[in-house]
Image (cartoon, rainbow, N blue to C red; front, side, top):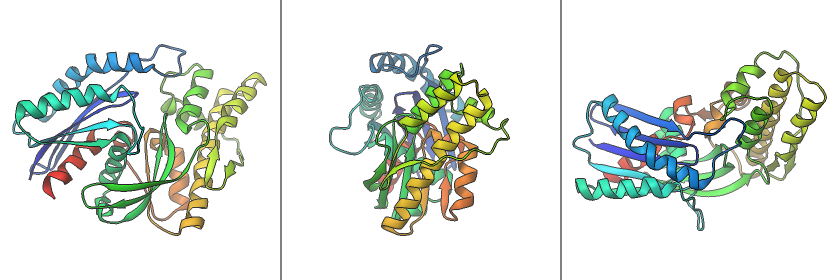
Length: 313
């Protein structure tokens, strides 16, 4: 039994989580980084500043939610985007610095992982498939900064991963957010785009651009811009964008299953919280698993879970 504090300072969200196995409790606290209206993202220098300002608030809020942050047995923290050489973003230094201070102050072990590994662990936890920590599966990480498919082998406390497919240009979350900005919607735009798309009754067909198991998404932004110039409704453009992303993910999944064989499918990342995408993929693949919305977007829950696994094995 253990109480573990997880910290994640990604490019869009300041997040902390407490996982308490004794109380069967998972508490999360998070704040989005502020993005000015009309902008399509946040610069790393700004991200570092905002994380530094927001992380104390996030941890204080977590303490209020959980009752207390006493008797912490370990600290988990994400230190880079992906678990590969050269993967680095300055924003993760904020979380790492705080985690080191807490680890030294509390005299408890510190366990590091990648942001991507945290996403995968959160999806397994949320979909009640932590048993896959001991097996093999395909994991899709689909977000504003990443659109990848991984062959994952769990080793009980972490993952061995190999990238087997990705978007060769624009990422799915970028296509969605840029389309949302075109339509004067708030950033990040996924939930707002989905609401618009659900109001469109047109049947939209879209053939994804595939190169083997990889996809290309830059054309989606260009086509949405052309539709807007041509007078298409905001609802139609929103549905077109999400349909294009959905069919591209389906194209990647079909190609991977054909190339590498059948394994469970795990979909993680903020884009995968979209209900339209989840319904389509669930209907097509019987062994597909998704994180609940609160575990799909950037979060520290998976980071805490991985630290907990290291602590207990």
